[in-house]
Amino acid sequence: MGKCRDTQTMQRIVDICLAVEQRRESERYWEAKQLFDDIRQKYRKGAGETEYWQYLFEEKCTKSLFNMTHPPGAFDADSAFYIVPFALVFGRKLGIPDEKILEIVT
Image (tube, rainbow, N blue to C red; front, top):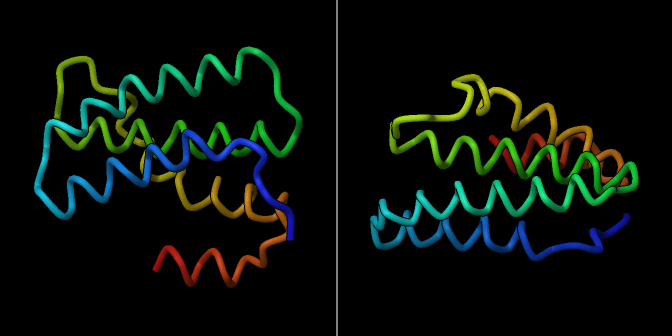
């Protein structure tokens, strides 16, 4: 199985999720907007095929986290529906079987 070279943004997504889940810190959702902007900058600098799918997956995650606050100027409402399909494609790029991805998300 392959590994991501860039794990920084994924770790930040996990940190936001854990903080919100454990401490009910809803203000942490707002960090997702800044994180989305950071991911978009990485994407614009150029990426290989695996990184391309990683950034798309991460963008959908951060959009969905941000939208959970029902902010003005929310991202596309359908962002959450793309998380699993993008996770599957990204996982395939890393050599992770679809069954493992589906086990994680269900």
